[in-house]
Image (cartoon, rainbow, N blue to C red; front, side, top):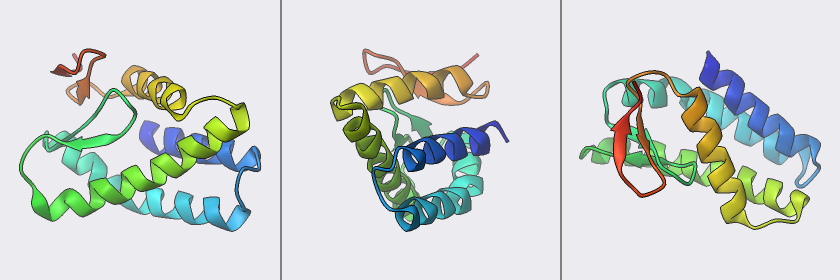
Length: 123
């Protein structure tokens, strides 16, 4: 549930900034919401983690799930780019800020990547 609220909040924030059309962000929100149960399952199995740039990353060989990770990351990047444009900042700034938000809100035992690139499970 925390994840769904975070995803919805991020998409809504970008939508409200008016960086793209309503249809674009409505579609992104729908896709992200649809993928959420799969992503949560992959996280609970330790197959994916959240990297230090605010994107998902495969931690175990799971080629059948690479498409889910790639699709999620494409949508996240579109949202991050919209925020960066609206805030007149670099994409990298938005990515790192979002990664910090994800880290704070992550459930225990989720895999996260610290600033140095080291992976760890949240206690």
